[in-house]
Image (cartoon, rainbow, N blue to C red):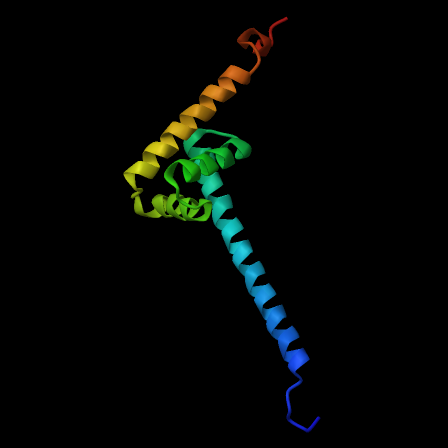
Length: 116
C-alpha cells in the first residue's frame, strides 16, 4: 500500500458506521415525535399512555397514513390549529372507542366507593 491510498475495507466500515449512526438518529427523532403525539392524545382524550398509543396506531391504520406521519400531524396541530378532517374524525372516534373499552373493562362503580 502506498502513502495516501485509502484502505477500502476501512472506508466501507466507516461508511457503514455512519449509515448506522444516521439510522439511529432518525429512529430517535421518530420516537420523539410519537412520544409527543402520545402526550397530546393523552391530554386531549384524558387517556393513559398505552391507550393514547393505541389511538395513534388505530388512526394510522384507519387513514392508511404511517404512524410517524400521524404523529407529526398531531403535534403540528397543537401549533397550527389545523388537522385534516378525515384524520380528526378518526382521532375522535378512536378516543371514544378507548373510553368505551375502558368503561366496559373497568370495575363495577360500587367497587370504587371508599365508604365502609
